[in-house]
Image (cartoon, rainbow, N blue to C red; front, side, top):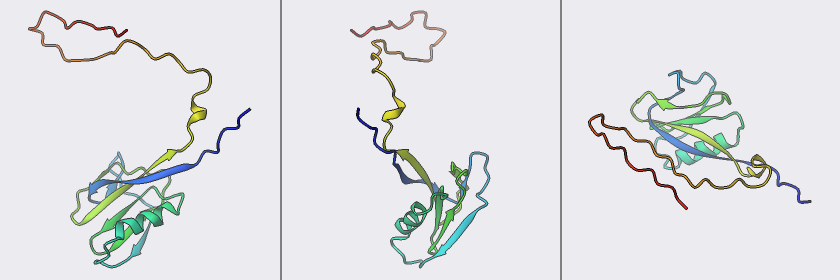
Length: 135
């Protein structure tokens, strides 16, 4: 019998845009750690991403044009948007599992042959569009 491969986590950082990070409720993070670089540091984004990736509790970071990086060290904090502050950028840590084969146990399920589509219908239009079945 074949043993499943160990699950390894992979993460990447995606920009949420200009401004400080806020969660879905509009709250800023409460646990942060600031690193000071240089305002001429062309690699600040990559350096902050590397610092965040080294810490399991890091859920994102903020870069400031003055050369500062603020790590968000709250594993339960999920940056969702920004406050649009100038010269500041928010990055969200997106996590993936490399091995998701255990999520699908058993034989593969058949692929459905019906495509569903939803559209808004104009009340003035009495004729409904036809339904097509793929074979």
